[in-house]
Image (cartoon, rainbow over all chains, first blue to last red; front, side, top):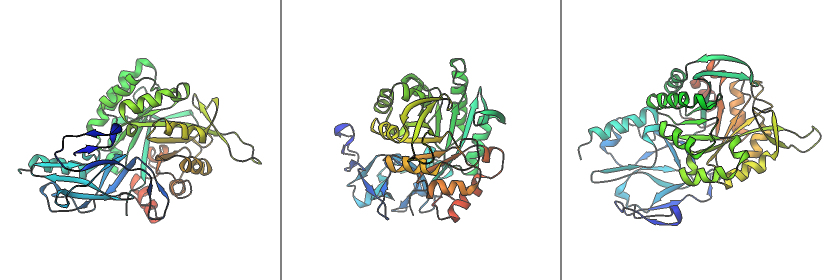
Length: 123
Length: 258
């Protein structure tokens, strides 16, 4: 991303032109306060067909643990979205880059499938 | 649809073997931690917690080795607690493959340790474990105190205020155990769980007292917990993790079933 609010604000590598922003106080659909960090298994809505999603159903759950999220990406760079008080980019892609907010290495079979897809992907 | 509630089987490990105490007495052996963790991973557990109850310095290497073995075969988050006292302990556990580290007595002795740990490694991997016991009389307003040394030593710290302080210091999650309920199979202390869950901005794991699947539902629905931890009901095959998930989903709790 271009910039992050982490550590009182830092410039980043800028592979993507998005921002990393703190979740802050989030409300659930029913008006309750959502816990931060966003911790646990949430669903990823696939925003596009992509070799990295091969064998992974839309809305599959992955393991998340984070207090900051990515905003401000161009639509064509958002490979997947997740909802937690707001909709944020759970997967971003451009050319030969594919980045995820969740932890594939901790996301059981779905995560291992994603990692296998990465090894097979020939962008 | 959204974030699912988590089921976390807990492995109490003594000198490399999984045990579970009934109120910390009468310990039974339930086997090899690596095998059990793998079994839970395959059964659809959402996380695994590993509590090292030996925590003597001589056994540290055994623990790190076990954590390495688990992390190489288990692809769900692993929290390790027990005897975590220094930043070095945390670094060693994270390097061995733990995703989160639980801090208990060391936080009571030195709250600043939690702040240093969160600043160094990030709040997402710092879990503060709280052992609380009810100290108010039946006629009084509920009050719980923090106890250390397996529930034997009172600290004078109010549990709700303590939980809030720990999250102010950077704890990313609270593992809350009711010492009154632990090992009883009478269900979570719901009032305690609700009091802590409402007081802190971070996720709360309810622990202590699970005897049946309705207890898991109650912890989430009435207690407001984000995750539920249990040991013996799973270790001794009374219920499978899948049965627990199906039961909770049928009761209206969002779960990961895929």
